[in-house]
Amino acid sequence: MNTKKAEKSLRSILTLWFLAFTIIPLAFISGYSTVLYESSLNNELQKRLEGNVREVGVTLSELETYLVKLGKIHASDPTLVYHVATRNIPASRRVVTEWLKTSPSTSRIVIFDREGRLVVAQVRGQQNDVKSQSNLEAGDVFLADSLIKEINLKGQATARDILPHSGLELVAYTRIVGKDNRTVGYLEEAIELGQSFVLQLKKRLNLEAVIFDEKSQPVASSRDDFFLYPKEFFPEKIGGGTRTFFDITSRDESYGMIVRRIIDSDQRPFVTLGLAASKKESQQVLHRIKLTLLTITILILIFLIPLLIYVSNRVVNPINQLVEATQRMEDGEVNFKLEDTSGTEIGILIDSFGRMAKNIQSTQTTLVQSAKMASLGQLVAGVAHELNNPIGFIYSNMAHLRDYVQKLLLVLETAEKNPGKLAEIKKQVEFDYIKDDFFKLIASCEDGARRTRDIVMGLRNFSRLDEAQLKRVNLKEGLQNTIKLLSGELKNRITLHEDYQDHNQVRCYASQLNQVFMNIVSNASQAIKKQGDIWIKTWEEGSWAFISIRDNGPGIPKVDVDKIFDPFFTTKPVGAGTGLGLSISYGIIQKHGGQIIVKSEVGKGTEFTIKVPVDGPSDEKST
Image (cartoon, rainbow, N blue to C red; front, side, top):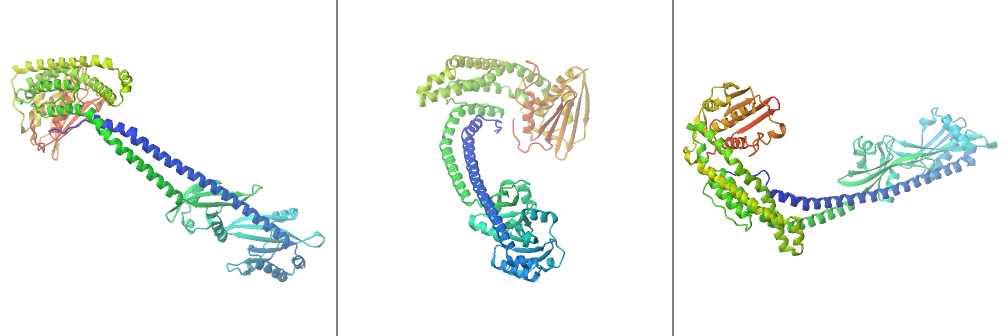
């Protein structure tokens, strides 16, 4: 049996509506809830981190205040003032060394003479030992004139520097004043806030901390993984901004990181700091929420799927009988019986269709005898014209009957489940109008069936033709015979250009293939209103035979090209065509295991290319 299926079934449409009104809203609600919750978590996390950033900013301000006070205390130390004033460098160095040993927060102390020349430079080493920077003490290192001017004017000056691979350094410069308020030198003290500082922040805040340089590269981090990211990663995330929040992954654990530029009350920047908090706990909660929503969705579907099956069966099964009957007719089956199981008016339609189908099938054998192709073409055209109107009645009524049945089923279902709303539903679906119009439609279908029966009865005077058989034929002969049959239509109007390449005979249903040639050549001729040309060409490629039929008619609009093989679609005026010729041709070529390809351009013409296997269809089917 032919297994051709409708491109869109009523059951599929019901299923799609079911998806649209159940799964899609559930998925939207679940997804929206998840996104909303995750967004809330991010907002809370961002607020928390912003508070931590402000806390770090206060810490930096306090450290700088401490450094400034420490500088004042050291710069006013009488021993240091005396040694610097008398230029006793070794003694000054010993004083500075002692300070570094007793002040663990200070990382560097430097003394400049009254001219701003560096004379002592002591730093704290990695092992907390104090060392002299002899390379600086031996060279000509001076304070900048602008810095000296600021120190002399204010008594002190501060600076903040980012050290590569170290972190942030806070520096305080203090003027060393001798007798008579004279400047005898300058004191520089620094606190380095590097790896140990960010580790302290991690311990205190339970966060990962990162210090960035001016190029948005990490110079100190409580997590070594952050140094392993590509150089372009953090600049792309931060983007030169001073307020950024983004996600970052380290060792398969997700973090929310905030990057802020910390400034003091004078709007002077301290440092660009990143703080990151783990999202592990929030992700676990989010996972549980997703699982709960998924469980609810599955339970709802388990309840709704049986309901969908029940409703679709009630609506679709009667229609499926008609669809199956149509397919059986297409396969040539005559003796079949349709059973009325719906118990509704659609049963009358099914019975009428069954009687009509039997009458129409009686004309099938008249379409296969190749010895009478000319008479057969006229017969088919006549039958098509005569059957068009009664079948058109029935076909046009089907849409209304389907709509009425669906509405009546809704009324029945309401009467069963919710009688209180019956009056409202009957008014909504216009029940009284349907009740009156339904039998009119049935009568119209019966009238169409009677007229079809009368037409079929009139065909008894025509001789029956033998069933078509698979055999090897020459495509050239079939095309030339077709042209002869259409000679009256083509003569003195159409110029034919024939190009038949030598090839082996093709195994096919000859009469059916000739019918395809007849339909396409006839359509091409009718498309050309006055004078025109038709090109016919055949050739072989491997195991395939090709037939091209091209015209220079008006062409087919692009919007109609995809519809020309649909049953009953036609661009001809009312009464001039049934829209079945190309549909039948398409089915014949499919039966041969081939293809029909159409190319058309408005104003230039149309070309049909037929492709069939040389050795015939692999699945031999009788007509």
